Image (cartoon, rainbow, N blue to C red; front, side):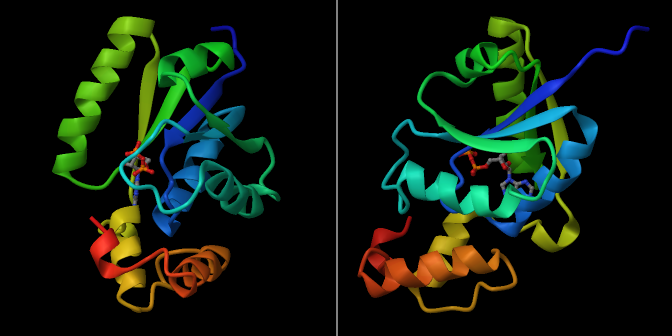
Length: 171
Ligand code: ADP
């Protein structure tokens, strides 16, 4: 069979990016010729970081990874994929709850746009890591250095110092 160039996108909110996301990027990138980490700009509930801040944190982390890039996007994920001529959506799975949600999303995306979703299973140590949990632990002054990269620890500390991250603002 003829070998085709495969470009994948890894869409998400990344508010903020965690070591779990990074693990998906590092393993997922080996499966494709090119991987674009795509930060959704569409309003999520009470985002902590601006889309630009989220893109910047990821850019620092992927700068030495060949064939991996990051950018923000506003439109529907499948529209964005089409515009970038990507044929695969990469997503990560942690739990059965993720499977339920992701299955629906993947089936819808295939039905409406014919795009395939490829899943990478989390490494066990990050099975419970989510951006929401990170925000919560950070707001309570907990140590999150095992779960997020160093540059994200710094950015989270800044948000706490600036008073943008208080326990009641976390959901
Ligand atoms: P979204 O709001 O689109 O779910 P997220 O930034 O929360 O965006 O997650 C993006 C993707 O990364 C999702 O597929 C999610 O399941 C996956 N993911 C998040 N955390 C982890 C983790 N610790 N291990 C593996 N996959 C993860």
